[in-house]
Length: 281
Image (cartoon, rainbow, N blue to C red):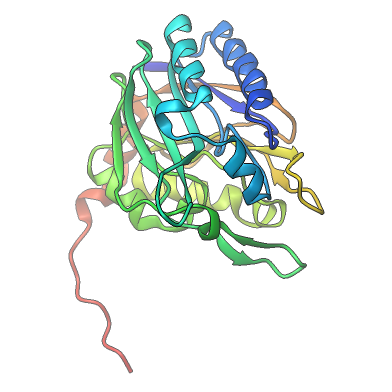
């Protein structure tokens, strides 16, 4: 029940081919360091402020070169790989993309895929505004992947603000909740650690959150900045590892028995009850 994980932290830009070279380097580094489970951040293949750029370089899942290359790499290295997410064309009439996470087995096969449900449509105040739903269409299904060594509850970034999704995954049997992200700096400073620790504590699960970091060559003005601090959190809410603010691999050794131990101490999953919502005014 012991597992070594490697959380890859990168600074993706607008060129998927360049991003692939960077992430492949770090996946190899993770495997060389003994990681059996390697995780990459949200939008591993692209961060771009330009819909025109996205439309020019993104592909549908069947033709995506990043997905093809990383499946081959997982098979070569014999690791289980969570591709935090890829931007992918969907073929839908409105031209919106999918923000899709993949769980890849050590045989290179896709074990599970999850499309981000909650879209980051916010105005942060200081001129920083995001409309993820303008470029990406939301998913509508929670996904539990089977990695063999553990059941993996798959989420992406903004999903972490919606605890019902995490509770549904834990109730369905998740041992590890994944939360790959490209978190903004202001919200990261305020909420990143607190939200992820809360999701771990509430559900008695490990939370693994590989993150984008730094300043991105995304074609925007000003260029986008992300918070970094890839996190591994225990089912008791302890921060086991923090990736800081620069590119690299963060290693963490997990004892999956800790899931059962935490849930035995605080059996809140077993204590959940159905209740009627409050009446309106």
